[in-house]
Image 1 (cartoon, one colour):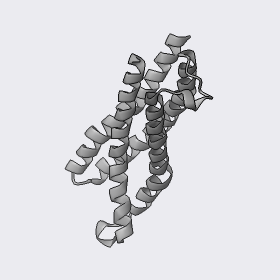
Image 2: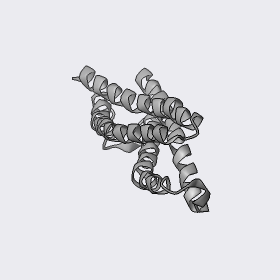
Image 3: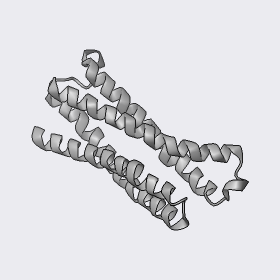
Length: 158
């Protein structure tokens, strides 16, 4: 049972983080390098939208398996005062990552879709901020996800 849960947890984490790396470090620079030609923007947008439900399935798997794995390791999920510091650090990063993912998917995503239909020269300063924010939140999320991964490795070694 423990090995199956570890496998599912790792598979979900690899899926989420791997997709983030691909979108942030491969597809986004490709789109920017092509001066945002419409077909490349469409490719990026459709790829990101296709990845979104995969992310949320991975999140569900992580949220389901994480507490079970802690419990099987003797860490009482209902007793946060007894949690090791690395568990607290990892969970804090996870909460921050989930918050940024929700903001990106539910707030910024729809705004970027709306604003992208407006020519750049006609965008208001707030619409330009939406675009800039939509660029840095995934990068920040990737850094936080890598922090979660480091915390997970430290937890596995303890």
